[in-house]
Length: 147
Length: 147
DNA sequence: TTAATACCTAAAGTTGACTTTAGGTCAAGA
DNA sequence: TCTTGACCTAAAGTCAACTTTAGGTATTAA
Image: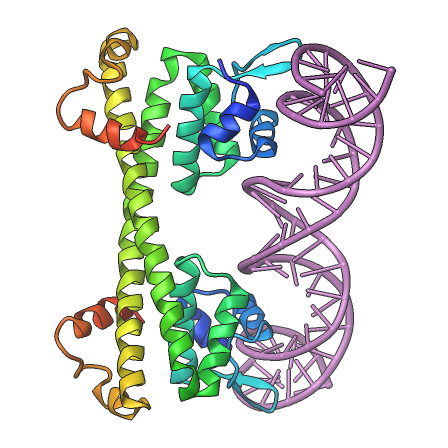
């Protein structure tokens, strides 16, 4: 069993945030001894899931819903599975978008390396939009596809 | 040249957002004819960069800084390169974290598929934390590394 | 005994990124 | 002529996720 301060240290999450999560109902079964919160293995796993779901773009109120389903037992396995499948799809989509972002950043890094060597953007502008060197052209195209 | 309504359509960004970006100084050279904004190729590329940098986690005020550097010309190539390199590193780190998130989601999907088949979590709990089947164990471990 | 430390609450404040509102201009079509 | 639609502004409002504040309890260390 851990105190709020220990959990804060362990996870690198501010104490105020842990209290906020608790207030929002993210630890439905959290025990207390004489007013003081006692975090067990269940709450640590809950916190791992919270960090995961938050990063996957889920809002606190929807994470709370999930925690309530957990507290309700086996009758909610279906809902929980559906939720994780939805988030998995969302994260896969986000990963694809981030790959596109990375392509834009790769292109821009190359662009400004060249600009610094050349001293201006004249030559670079003459290479746009389809005479860029191998590797860079592909990144540029992926970053600019659509519109 | 495009009107604000056309750009909004083209990029799927609300008109109010485009006006907000303008007010925040994200289109330093934006022209107007009798008060009405006229978006050119430069502004479209700026908007692409804005969407990219936003997705990479950058704040509006820092994107504004970048746009001001662009307006200042060749003397700021170095700063712009540095910025894009920093964001590239940030996005690569974010991608790694999202891969970990995806591992957690893969594990949870598998977990609840099993739980639905079994009707309870007894067998599953007996497999934790290190007797999970191949493929799943790896996802679980990556999702739980650290703490 | 007092002072530091770790915990507690409720309520107000903060931040960033928008969005909405209220009021106005201007050109085209019925 | 009038009204519809696309544009404009400044200012206020919204939202989520925290964080800070102000005030209090309980235990330990000097």
